[in-house]
Image 1: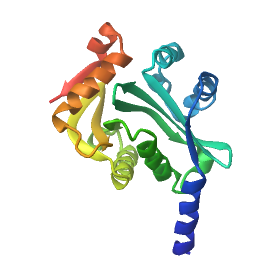
Image 2: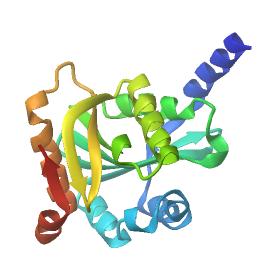
Image 3: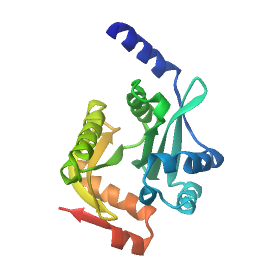
Image 4: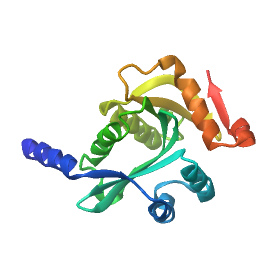
Length: 202
């Protein structure tokens, strides 16, 4: 069983295609999937995402298997750093190792970049045990796939996050992670919004 499964998984990785979504595809995901996958207050206004798309600071990717969309990942980009904004494997494709395949695809896709930064909700700040477990699992999933926990903590719109990083270059400068992330937040949030909603926990 185990050997066959790993064989199948390997093949899935070979067959899957990761590509940039066009504006129409991004809008369809925004309307059809985001409301199902995220709480209303976690969804950015579409106009903001389209602005970023048009000025080159937004990169929406889709993962396709057998021609079907099985996951999507939206990134904010500032020069050679990326911030993972939304990342979802569609429900019918979950628990098949596809999440890990998609993360490996990011590495290939953005191999000329310095790294990808991710925000993960802090387990110790969860409201209940179930939510805490979900958050711990999420962090472990990323760690198994080569994403490291940094020492950075930030509150966005009042929500406490840890920052994780997937280095894409041999030696990304750790000292700059906070500065790079700060630039990404500025790219995403116009002045007043940034000041009101981004707090670094040092």
